[in-house]
Structures are given as C-alpha cells and as structure tokens.
Length: 203
Image 1: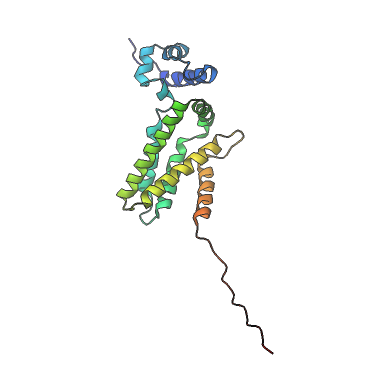
Image 2: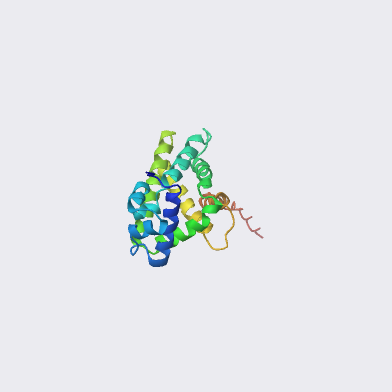
C-alpha cells in the first residue's frame, strides 16, 4: 500500500488556496481540502499540521536564506549592509512562478485577523533570528536589533510591491530600490554652510 501519494502536497496546497479564496478560510475544512485534492484526511496531516500551515509551512526556507545571507556577508560589512546581503540571499525564495500563489495567499490572509497575526509572528521570529545572527557576528545592541527590524520592514514593503497587480520586477530588484530609499531617509542631513555676511561699510 502506497503511503505517500506523488505530488500530494502540491495538490493539497492548490486545493486549499482555491477553497480559501472561494469560500473563506474559516469556512473551509480539512476534509474538503483533502477531497478536492483527491487524498484522505490522513494524507493531509502527513504533510501539514493543520489547515493554517498550508499557508505558512515554507517559512523555514525563508529563514534559512536570511541566516545564510548574514553568515556569508563580508566580514567588514556594516550592520545594514549585512542585512542587505541577507535580503539578496533570500530573494530567490520568491521566484516569479510563485508570484500568483503569493498574491492569492496574501488576499486570504488580509481577510482573516488570525492569519494576519500568524504572519506577524512569523516576521517577528525571523527578525529575532536575524538579530541573534548579527550579534554572533559581533554587532552590538541596539544596532543588531535595529538592522534586523529594518531588514524585515524592507522585506514587507518590497513583498507588497512584488505582489501588486502589473508588477513584473523580481523581488531582489524591488528590495534594492526600497533599501536605497531607506538609506536616503536615514542619511545625515547636509545643511549649507552659513556664509558670514560682510559688515556694511560705515560712512
């Protein structure tokens, strides 16, 4: 007896997203997802802990890309540049063939407060892991936490642009543009040097 149906996980993801989009996340049951994918509920639970994890089960891969990026950044890189390296290393996780899935997934999350909370917790855990990795590299606080949180803000803003209708740029290119905006915003302001006025001639 075959225990693992070939392609079952992919079929379950597709079926779940279709049902979440059509009738809502809360209204969809595991039994309905399994039936739509042509598998049993038992098979569903072999792949996913619950119906929520269909939307979140790949977050470990994103975290892995971030942490590898931190670890492989140049030794003399500043904290924000280390985070930029981590963003570039993790960007391939969001390949162009996942854009449609990500767009639909986000539309489901945006309609459900519990899923929104789950997404925020995911990002908070990732920020904590990146800050810890920065500290291991010798970055002190509060620079480590500030850089990590800044990187996650860049990711969130870039991801929102990446899934926007009509957007065609890869996520990495969008992240570079958002990072540049951040650098401009945080750069020291340059004030023109005051030119002393010449005293008026006395008559």
